[in-house]
Length: 510
Image 1 (cartoon, rainbow, N blue to C red):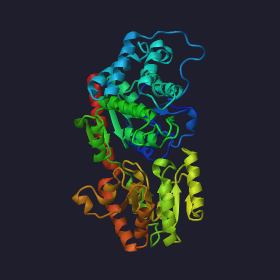
Image 2 (cartoon, rainbow, N blue to C red; image 1 turned 90 degrees about the vertical axis):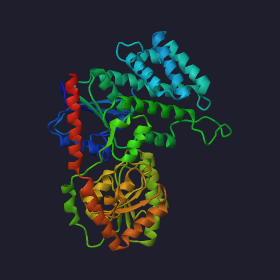
Image 3 (spheres, one colour; image 1 turned 180 degrees about the vertical axis):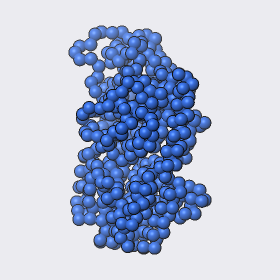
Image 4 (tube, one colour; image 1 turned 45 degrees about the vertical axis):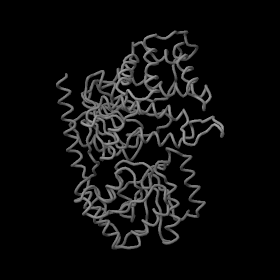
């Protein structure tokens, strides 16, 4: 597939594992943002894990995407063949030791960030700390061995050694990407992590503004992934493990992502959250309060309003979870809830509308659970679907996630007049019950339930579906809330101001 290439662009969008390869969520928002500003020329830098993890584009690139490039974090490590013997630069590796000491002793974030920034400069092409020095030098070996001896009781040294390589090697690749990217006036990242690190490199090296928009908090989401991950080995035996302690491997990864977040927060201005709880989390994680503010998601009302007239006279007995079939969406809780729903409402159906390719093992577990509960006729895996086709046919949008930000799927349901039953994550309580007195006066547009509680999820759903008056009241509140607070025009106006301010600052420097 050929991709557009240009000599320059207005805005570089740095995207990690989202648009255009992954559908829904953040990707839908990115697609909205690009298309909302045809006057700006966008360059997309897509960062993925491995090339084989991504297949075809899920979105067609808008016409104002004039440049697209993709880079994969976990490719080949270093050079082929036998590497040459090398000592490693004394000054550069002394900075690495100082940084590790700061990490281990906690506190002193500003001093550690200064060292981190200096090391990053040495990692640039031509600097004193090149990738082959990290992979093959004597000083790098000494630091890795010393760190293992002092801290590591759970993994084997071989596991530790390769984890360190896999964790840090992408930073050199990103430094090269930052050096070679076409000229742009503004950088916009949709997360911290590796994308945020690249955004900060571009901002610092080129002296251009960096905008950070976080839908979820990257470090929080990575912690959830790390807690649930099975690929991080823990070689301690049952007598060595303290259930209150994280394995050192997990601590390493968490600390690493936290520092990538600090690095991005230090460079970004503004730092945008979807809602107040996440803004406060950003401040706790190192963002300067004066740089932070909220811009909630918004949707195109005209796309969904016609769906209201297509609805049958009474609420369809269909509960629909629209989302990827992955652990963070907790599909299994929805399936278990459906067993209780069907027991009391035999005509009910549960639809799971979303791609299952991202985590095939988890998807298979979900299919197995449906069979074990005898729900093959009631629970249907539909794959990716257009929401326009779904909304007139469903009675409830279900969100059983263990982590969310401000889900577009809830707003899309609202615009079509569909109430929601959601777990108490992210901004979902705000979306269902209202943010302030004026918002709460509109009424509840669904129900909020605890995480991983199939009984409460089922009972809340039955309450709405079995009482038409209650369902209709929630539907009216949903429509009123989305029309008053969550339209795309409101969001676009605020982001247009963000971009205009950034271009003005860029012009002052250049």
